[in-house]
Image 1 (cartoon, rainbow, N blue to C red):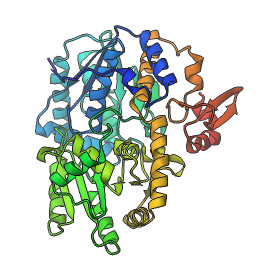
Image 2: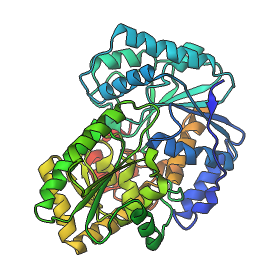
Image 3: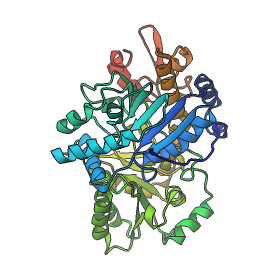
Length: 468
């Protein structure tokens, strides 16, 4: 039997006053038609990444809404997770190669996990490449299978994509963060675009008094009488932590007492993280103004909350990015962001809100310096960023997207509720919580609304693509 992950109890109604009541009412209504539906979320690790954070909130809320939801994880040894990390990197465009022995290890580990999936479910969500072959190996049964890809697969290594895609043909639907992430010749007919979201009531994001946050950071050795910039992410080459260090050093030429905190998480399915961690340690060991923390040295959700709340700037200099939940996390706390212009980051910072997007170390340093030296502009950007997160990137919106997909799948036909379709951004897939002020366009006798001017502009360039 696959290992189950324990979760707590949550209530959807606790989000009233945080998100629009109309969205929560719609959530209850859609969920009412799915009461008793058995749902499984299946992934590779119970901690250390954005998927695990989402599931820890999503699963108890599904149960609160009347579904019967569980979360299970697959098992594998270090060699297996080294292979899946290689696959992960290659799907983001890396140049790795995969030996026949590595392919066989991946398949046989998936086969063992498939044999341990004993219970029956109505809908099974399989997250990312690690457990992807399971329905092909254990049989679909009477379940509906959904593959949820959280990474940027817009330009995958062709060899790796050919290897992975053979296991995806049995899925009933697939979910990507952005339409652009769907690879060419994707073998699953029904593709949904559903960006992730943050949980504003989780320990990482709930309101934290600044006095408490100061105590937390001072306890672990951070001085708060000098400027502080922070990057919170896995220790991963795609997050470019060495590029962040270089940008920080450029800014220190102007602000010599600047501190940099690199706050990373180690996960069971990411053996490469230790290699990157060691490189960062070597690069920064002579600089007392660089602080490195991990979840294995006592820095967890509350500490991350405090870092994002009290940092002058949060940096996320990603080279490739599926979504980057830390962007919305920082903006939700009213902290401006400097981030790589890649993946799901432009969706979160659309229309110039929240901070600055960059494409180089030099641009990163320049943008950090702007935010540190122009406090009024910094506060203005952070304020607009927080409002965009409130409108679009909080957990109830994600739940509404996923429940609506389950309703369509289980009914075997498109959802009839025209109100839902009218309030959905057909470019990014999100609920638009204020259709009155949202950008809109007419096409084919219908009105379409959008979460941002950026999505509106993309629709106008090719409306047929988004209305098929």
